[in-house]
Image (cartoon, rainbow, N blue to C red; front, top):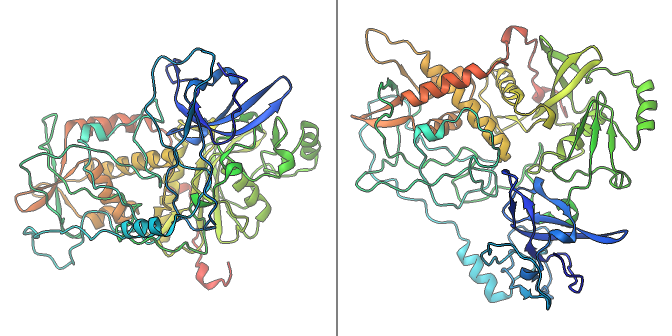
Amino acid sequence: MADTSVDIVEGCRLPVLRKNQENEDEWPLAEILSVKDIPGKKVYYVHYIDFNKRLDEWVTPERLDLKKLQFPKKEAKTPTKNGLSGSRPSSPERDVVRPARPGPHPPATLPPVTPAPLHQTTQTQPQRKILESNAQPAAAPSRGKTLPTPKRKAEPVSLTSQPSPATPSSTETPQTYPPAREAFTPKSNNREEHEPLTTNGTTRRLIPSQPGRKRKANCGGTDEIIKVFQYNSPRCPSAYLPSGEDSQDSTDGIPTAPRMTGSLVSDRSHDDIVTRMKNIDCIELGRHRLKPWYFSPYPQELTALPILYLCEFCLKYLKSLKCLQRHLTKCNLRHPPGNEIYRKGTISFFEIDGRKNKTYSQNLCLLAKCFLDHKTLYYDTDPFLFYVMTEYDSKGFHIVGYFSKEKESTEDYNVACILTLPPYQRRGYGKLLIEFSYELSKVEGKTGTPEKPLSDLGLLSYRSYWSQTILEILMDLKSENGERPQITINEISEITSVKKEDVISTLQYLNLINYYKGQYILTLSEDIVDGHERAMQKRHLRIDPKCLHFTPKDWSKRGKW
């Protein structure tokens, strides 16, 4: 129960009552981001520490536990480094205020937390030197001696994922991957419980190292033939694999400068209280009402409205239902602008040029930003193509989701942003969007990869798609002359158009690749095979390449797009 004698200000931290997934009361630590006066009382916008931002909400004073209230320490009066993400202030101590009169409190006590300040301040000179000396990139780990591998003409390439030129380096401790049975889960009912995420969206799983086993630092080249084994036992022989980084990490230890084209990753150093708060309460899009997860830069005068109305065909935003009804009498669109390049059943895909259809593309980005927190929104949509998936009925083509891609990508990105709208999630549309992006890459004759980092839900979708696609290839291999079937990493990449680094990271994630008697083998256990078959039985939506009518363009010869 809140005590009116205590003045709660922005930046305070305290336990807040919320319901968990089992509908049980819990008191996680939360930070007060904003205070608002409404007739009769105050309400507080809170962010639950170590929870996703989409769970942030306005709460009433009755849900606050002031017995563990932590006030923010006053900031040092030193100049700040504007725009520099490398300036990290030390965590301030917080004063704990205990009210005079007792009140109810949560049964479980929370461990003390030292939160970060709201605004960055520069360190004093001695502290800065210490931080800079500690921030030097660590020396690359020794790879040790290379074990003998079969002779081949191709140059050896490490099976650990190669550094990506457009992603910052990861400074985390290398970790191993889980066993195959735990790694391959066709479907889960919980989005949050799958895997912990680092700040840049990558996944890490911690498995204790096994004593007495030698780690092989290097794997063979991607042109090396790998034999495929299927075991009848529930478990294949476990192997201690090198802890390959996810393909969305860089291993060179040096952050690269941001690119000047394409969608950029959000720079958290520029976050402020405004962009950390959801500014739209509800969006009405066709027959659906959507609750936004994150901030989106809609015009400020629209953020005070209880409902923001969107035309589901042109995505124009309007302030009232009356305005929407008047707009619909004048809007001639019944499908997204652009060319319809795919249709099968009720599913269609439209290709939209961000330069030719600028207004629609900007409105699409504004809507997508409500559900994507890891990308920075730019109004310059000229360098992008947008592929919008729709579902058809008698009233028109209704938007289901979309992905965007750069017209020219030097990093082989075939997806910049990807989103399935919440009413259509968990119905197979996410994998359909991913599969369609790789079908376009096949027509272009390229291998592709999504722009990193991925969101938590995006990473789960891509992991699942890569796993199912690669296992589908491996299980369809036919043996010749009674020998085990053989395939190379490059062949898997060429068949699927999945980039080699993503193929390798997926094989390691599933714990399929092992070193045995001087060569690399892929071991498919019964757990993996059974899980894959169950997952494919539930996957009813697939892309039919025969229904795709797409001619790739060479954007390098078209001037400024």
